[in-house]
Image (cartoon, rainbow, N blue to C red):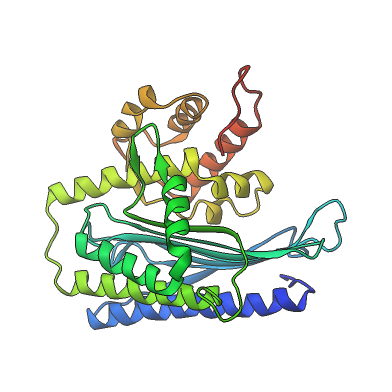
Length: 331
């Protein structure tokens, strides 16, 4: 049984993110229905310490119809009974959608609320649009939506987002639109005064983009499929070597490895990943070498759940192993 946080505010935040989860699922299903498709999402539950300290439920879409990968997760963890921890509770929605069609962009959305035992609380908001094949109209629509609902926070959030999602070794960004606010406490009645309402607007905008692409979609070419595969390899590379949230989640516990790595696409180009080793600085270079040892040998390798478990374990071993003098592990 998954126990909820005792805090009234945490319980309220949980209701909000659960509503966002269902809103996102229903929006995607509505797009699928217009296409005569069925977008079925299957719930998968996980427990933190057998549920004593919470856990979560993620809805996973069936692969191979509209989605390469789609996972919409809600979690709440809490530690009122552990005085050594400063965190009282954390409640989050974290969603990643990788559409099957190469011309339809991926999206990542994270919104969480943390409550500390010293009485401090704050939001963390992260949104990024990630196309394999860039479309200027999509970026403009997405950016304009973010700007309209974030107001004066837009410039700061896009700068922080660009910093977060830049990949120095490859000298490029993960996506085309990045938005990031950390330890955020909005003013009552001002812009971004309701982070869940902000997330709802982002979801609506993204689903409109998906609908527009899929209603006019033609059978993708082999070249477009290859471009998407290579982009998914870049996405994989950024997540495992640079994403601080992913690394922190894996280091905190091993009870939800598959969910923590839910953002990984279904397949990557192993040959391309290997070619990036020489560009990758220490200590991430050693991490990529570790991961190549557990990835399937095929040139196009599938990132199934069993592989995710292996990836998670190798990432933990990497970050917990002693570092060369003067080198700190990247998170």
